[in-house]
Amino acid sequence: MGKIHIMDHPLIQHKIGIIRRTETGSRDFRTLISEIAMLMCYEATRDLDLVDVEVDTPICKTTVKELKGKKMAVIPILRAGLGMVDGMLTMVPAAKVGHIGLYRDPETALPVEYYCKLPKDCAERDVFVVDPMLATGGSAAAAITMLKEKGVKNIRFMCIIAAPEGVKKLSEEHPDVDIYIGAMDDHLNDHKYIVPGLGDAGDRIFGTK
Picture 1 (cartoon, rainbow, N blue to C red):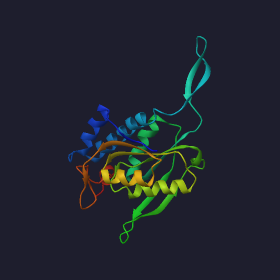
Picture 2: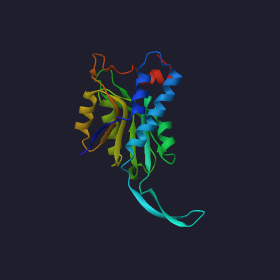
Picture 3: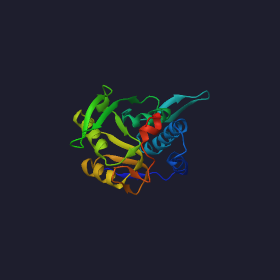
Picture 4: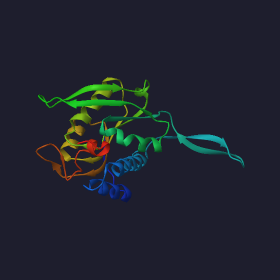
């Protein structure tokens, strides 16, 4: 069963407090989103398997720890998820990056795929799906379903701010996926925005309205 991890690190909480502020501009917002993703990546990878490897130091031979086996992939959900990629790659430079694009059908309100490009060996990697906001959970659940249909088995989801409604939907549809959350907010409003939230993450990252 997947677990729900709510980050309690003081640096993560401090930086989330800054990105919530209306007066935080796009440049600072982008920097902070990347920094939060980096700190969350550090926390979310603490259970990755290690293996002993013998190396030569300038003094002698010794045994060190290295990551075992499977490599990582980071899959942002377009477009806001792009803001988290650089922070993840700062921690794991060897990770491959894929992209999933979804839009909400205005009539059915269901997510529709418009773009999907994954690393060729994605099925053999530990995959982190990233999106700053987990609101209704529809896009995240659809993205993970797409990955599973393409043979990906080891999937984790990472968001900076989540609403309980989105966490409930995602954990019900994908009970095998661990969910990493920077801050759990109160609820969704009538327009499906997270309250208190931070507004539209994509608009704030890219300076669009």
